[in-house]
Image (cartoon, rainbow, N blue to C red; front, side):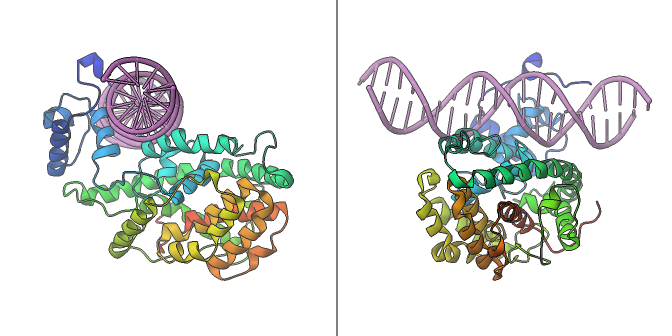
Length: 357
DNA sequence: AATCCGAACAACCGCGTGCGG
DNA sequence: ACCGCACGCGGTTGTTCGGAT
């Protein structure tokens, strides 16, 4: 297929962007929108290829991206989603508000992968390596892992639909915002992820029992494992929430995220009151959906035997029901783990049904 | 003070794919 | 149906910076 000429073939500038170039690009996009990336450089007076401009814009200049250190919660989310989605950075990014896929990818490659490896977790399979650390939970972990890979296949198919819907959604959104180019106070995932994720709602309600990853999960209630969801705007985060979200992020950024050395006890402590109050109290949809999940996941990594307690804790803190505490088998843990991830994912859902699928 | 080294991150490159002609 | 363009994605490389020696 036809490929656009490479930058060096037509003698355009490469390498780091200067502030002047940034200003030019920003000014142009603010005034005209990006339009065709290919045509943009000449119109904006830049000696760059369109691809480079697009990258600079999406990864750095866009006003709606959050930069800086990843919070503990964000890191845990990345790990969980990576277990589910693999190296689909753009898909993962749709669940991490205001983070770019490139940033997430870098974070994974430079931090998270190494941490997991240090903990004895294979960052690719998310399984314990050499039976190093889980001990009595080996079998349970293996079951969870099996469930994981099974689910990943299903998720892969789901993502295709998600991608299409995200694109449609994006087009609708950009059509209304392109020229004005206001910083979208947004959760990019909300528009992108929500339609398809509604499938999960339907799926949960129906308790489908198929030879698919869905069969590894049982949702005993309409929202079992689902956490209270703050009603949001169509962009995912309401204006007030957006502010609160920023505050929460800022607070959390100061938090020690070197969780790799956290002991089991420390992790359990994190699941308790203090954390629940601090984070669940923040009323952030994204956070509320993942608090218990993240801790539970980390716990599972560090010591499978503590998962029971984690599940209970999560179940109680999330929806006030104790049903998770019944999940004492390996399968139960697997369900809990996956329910947690799905709960996190679902917590981003707006209440509207998807336009189509 | 100079050098080395690793971490972090920005940017590039090639491929796959959707879409319009 | 085919072709070519444009774009998005993921892997990889290059550059910068800070700490250690």
